[in-house]
Image (tube, rainbow, N blue to C red; front, side):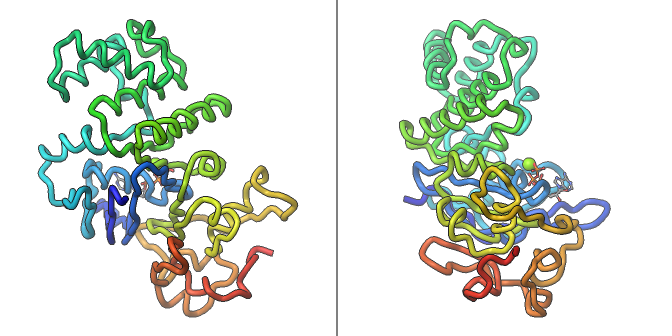
Length: 325
Ligand SMILES: Nc1ncnc2c1ncn2[C@@H]1O[C@H](COP(=O)(O)OP(=O)(O)OP(=O)(O)O)[C@@H](O)[C@H]1O
Ligand SMILES: [Mg+2]
C-alpha cells in the first residue's frame, strides 16, 4: 500500500548567485512498512528532498513544481498550520544534527513530555507515562528521563530523537543521516532499532545516507540520487547485484567492503554545481559510456523492469554491463 507519492518534485534555491536546482524533477513512492533509502554524494539533494516533503525548506528554497501526496492530499498545497499537525501526526523527521534540537538546560524526560502535551490531549501524569513507554520502545531505561541532554552518548541521543519523533504516532519517519556521527557498532544497533520500529509499528521510513553499507544493512528499496535527480530506484538486492546505471555501479564498486574480488573503481571528477548543471544527462561528464545523445538529451526517468526505475539512455543495452573496467 502506497503511503506517500512524490511526483515530479522540483525544489530550487533562489540565491543571490542564481537559481540552485537542488531537486529537479524527482518521482518516487513510499510503501507502508518499508524502509526506503535515499542515497548519493554530498550535495545531491537528499536533505532538500526531505525538507520539501514537510515543506520546511530553509530560505531561499521553494517548491517550484510537483506534488507530495499523502492520503489523497497534496501537501505542497497545505497551509503552514495544517502542515504543523501533519508534521508530527503523519510524518515525523529526525535531523542530521540531533543535539541542536534538544534544550541543554531541560531534563530529557520533561522535553519529551512537553512535546507529547503539545500534540496529545493528555494529563501531565499520562504524558509522563507515555514518555516512559516511548523511551522503552527506543531502548532507553526510563530511569534516565531525569538526565540532561549532555549526559547521553551520541547513540542514546539519536534514540531520544526517535522517541521524540514518535510522540504523535506518525505513519512515516524521515531519518536524515541518523548514524553519521556514530561508531559502527552503535550505528548497527540504531539501524536495528529502525528495523524493529518498521516491523512492529508498521512504520514507513525514509532513510537518508551517503553510506551504502547502511543501505545494505537496513533498506528494502533505495533511490540513488545524483545532482538533484533520482538516477535509479529499485529494491536493495537489484541495486547491489543488477544495477543498470553507471553511477550506481561506480558508487558500489568504489567501496572496498562491499566488493568481492572485483576491482575498485574511482569515479573521476566531482558532482556538478547545481547552479549550472551539465546539459543532457547530468552524469555525462563523468560517465565512461556517455555518447552524444547523453550530452544533448536528458534521459527519461522510466520503469525499465517491474519496480525498477532508471534514467539512462543506455540502460537496456547489454554491452554496457560492467562499464567501469
Ligand atoms: N539554504 C540554501 N541556499 C542555497 N543553496 C542551498 C541551500 N541549502 C542547500 N543548498 C544547495 O542544494 C543542494 C542540495 O543540498 P542538500 O543539503 O539537500 O544535499 P545533501 O544530499 O543532503 O548533502 P549532504 O550529504 O552533505 O547532507 C546543494 O547544491 C546545496 O548547495
Ligand atoms: Mg543532507
